[in-house]
Image 1 (spheres, rainbow, N blue to C red):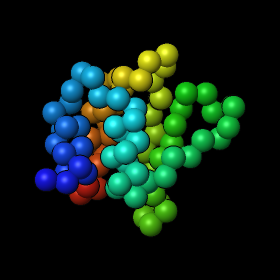
Image 2: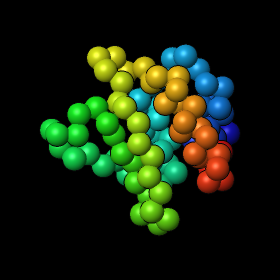
Image 3: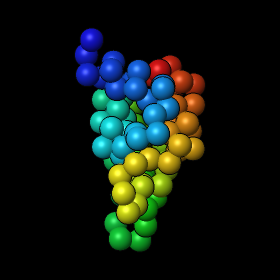
Image 4: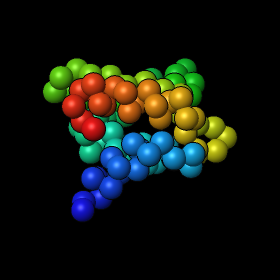
Length: 85
């Protein structure tokens, strides 16, 4: 089983310790690129996929690295709708 397949299985389990690094890896493997407006963007992060112009936005966790459960569920919903999960 590939690392990407394992990453997809892990997010679908909606773990309570899902990290921003894991989310970033999953989205990059799905073709998304992190976009940051600079210092004025705050904790809001956008991932953009140029091929179909899809956007996923969520708040980057702080001060820690653990993603909010609601943000994980929102990303799962979008990726599932788009046939990525």
